[in-house]
Every structure is written in C-alpha cells, then in structure tokens.
Length: 472
Ligand code: AMP
Ligand code: ZN
Image 1 (spheres, protein in one colour):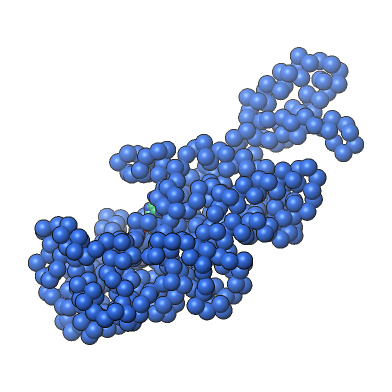
Image 2 (image 1 turned 90 degrees about the vertical axis):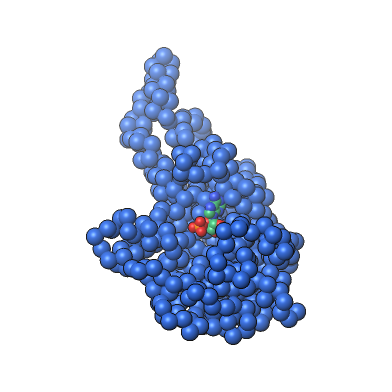
C-alpha cells in the first residue's frame, strides 16, 4: 500500500519512500520541560504516535526509529527553577524542575495511549555534537563569532553553492523580505538582522559549558542547534520525516534545516516535513490570561486517555482543531460503543480500509468513519467485523482495557454504586411482574436521576433483560 504524506517543504502530498526500508527514521520536536504540558502539546504527541504505529505496521516493528527530544536547557526552565527552589544552587534547582516535569510528561502521554519513542535524547547530553556542528559551520563560512556569541548567517548560506536549499524555502519566505521586515532593535553584534544565535555566553549562575570556535568564556547553546545535534546523533545527516506543530516551521525548523544542510553540505535535512495544525479551546486561542488554558492533566482528571486520544483524531492533523466538551462527550460515546462491540475480542487484523485511510496523509476522520461502519456491521451479526474492529482499534492504541474494566472505570468515575443499581433494576423488574407500573416508573426515574440509562431488551432465551449504562 502506498503511503502518501503532505510535505511542508514542497507543499504537496508526496509518495513516501524511506531512505532505508530497514530503518525508517523520524524526528519530532519534543517538549521544553518546565511545567505541565497543555492539551495543545498533546496534539503532535498523538498525531506522530499514530504515524509511528502506521510505519511499524508497514515496515515492521524493529525497522522504525522514532526520536523525540527533551529540551532541558532554556530560559523558561531557569526562571521556573529560581522561582520554585530559591534555596538551591541554580543547577540543582534546574535538575529538579526538569526531572519532575519529564516524569509528569511521560505519565500524561502514557495515559494517552502513546508508545514511547525509540530514543528520547536530552539536549544537555548532546553539547559535544552541538559544538561539533558549530565548528563545521564556522569553518564553512556559514557562521561567525561576535562578542562571545556564534551567529549563523542566512545570507552566507544563500550565497553558497547550489547543493544547499535556499534559506526561507521551508517557510516559503524570501530572505530580502525577512531583512526588510526585521525589527530595528537588532542586537548590535549581528551582521544582518536575520542572523540567529548558535551559541551565547551564559550569565553568572546559569548552566554553562566550554564554548566552541575559540571563545574563551563558557556559554550555552541556542534552541535550534539542539535539534540539529540530536537528530544527527540518532538519525544521521539526512533522515526521512521531521515533524512538529505548525508554529515550529519558522523560525525553528527553517533554522534547524539551515544548520544541518550547511554543516553536512546536504541538499536536505529530512525528506518530508510534517506539521500539525493548532488546537484552540471552545472557539478561542488557549491562553493563561483568557482562563481557558487546559493541561493534559486537567483533561485526564475528567476523561479516560482513550477518549482524549479519539477526540484528537476526529480532526485531520493539518486542520485546526476546536477542543470542546461536546466533542469529548461524543468521543466517549463512540468508545463506549466500540468497547461493547469489540472490547473482549482477542484477535483480529486491522481493516484494509483503516490502513488505506491512514496511508492517505493520515486521514483519521475517514478512518473513524470506517470504524463506525465496522461497528454497525458487527451489530447486524457479521462476527468477523467485530474482530476487524478490535484489530483496527488496537493498532491505533485503543482497547487497552477489557470491556468490563472500561465499564467499571466509567461507573467509578460517575460515583454510581453498581450493586445499588442492580438492586434497583431487580426491584423494578419485580414491580413490572406484578403490574405495579407506578412503582416501576418511579424506580426508573430514580435511576435516571442517578445518571443511569436503562436499556430493556431480550436475552438469548427470549426473556426480557435490562442492561444499563452511565449517561455521560
Ligand atoms: P512547545 O513546548 O511550546 O515547544 O510545544 C511542544 C509541541 O507542541 C510543539 O510541536 C508545538 O508545535 C506543539 N504545540 C504547542 N501549542 C500547540 C497548540 N495549541 N496546538 C497544537 N500544537 C501545539
Ligand atoms: Zn526541534
């Protein structure tokens, strides 16, 4: 089956052909670890987890390397460390903040049903690679030293040989426009307004390392060089897929690409660049000042991780997504339904139609429509559709629980006592048997008030049975 992915660089859907079928290589920019991740941060994590699962399905589990970095050197981390641990030396405080936040991030994304990437490199463990790339860039004439900073020169890149891509090609901007549009208060040591920092001197107390390029004072890396170094170390000079949120296209990915291509004299850093659209909450941009800032942790307090995961996949990854309570309720209903149909089915291969949808630039809305179709066919007695539904859901990171566990969790979350409900249902059946419909209706209303929905049906023996579930 042909996998086609939309490439931001060429602005078209392209047929995916790995550089090495035995080792398909993907890099996704990961979190800066200083605070709980918000629900927008969960989007690239879930989207690229689905792609990781699809690649493993197509090329084999041992033939895909997925690298997602952890940015553990950043001003926001330093500020948080100083605020939260004023009594500790800054470096120790920073370690506390990054270790705690990394643990929280892992707990959150595990709960969302995401596989751990093959490698999760930390920036601070790749300083040697960063220095090596910076040395190459200075030697090649792409970077220069000024006032103990090392700066990258996009103008030098564009003046160089034809192998290199043009600076601005990824974001589809021209360097002249960028120069013209640059702010006037540019740092005085920059030759051009568009030059960006590869390395800078550390302030007293900040994390610092010996500097490259003959600089005598200690310093620390700029943000963009971190990803060039970590992807090089774990995936090589050129790899297959580079991903992240749409906000990273410029300047972060444009600069990563510039650094890597110039350091390695390569026409490409990644063959395909993929970017997820932004998430907003109830129709508004998420922000702390608007009071609609939602962490993954907040959402997981109210909803199972699989509901959050499905809700994210209902929208195609490149479109903006509006995160709403209504959407979550609908996703929860769909999962209840799927668990009832397929939760206890052990084996089953994923449906071809599901794989086909995913191979069309991760068309998850179409894939979800297929799952609903399988569910209806299973309901009308097509047993093999039940197995296909189960196999498809498992491939996608759903059905991590049994149907009974799923129901129990739902009941616990609702605060409803299952034994009490069963007792009331038995009392209602007895009332109906003696034709006391006033009493049976009263019990039904009592159950409705508890949030329990009754479903009267027939058992295999043709006798009436009543099942129940929690209304969301
Ligand atoms: P950050 O920690 O801000 O660098 O973000 C980590 C990842 O989350 C990056 O891939 C961002 O592009 C992505 N991201 C941040 N905010 C949102 C949002 N509101 N919607 C979708 N993706 C986001
Ligand atoms: Zn990055």
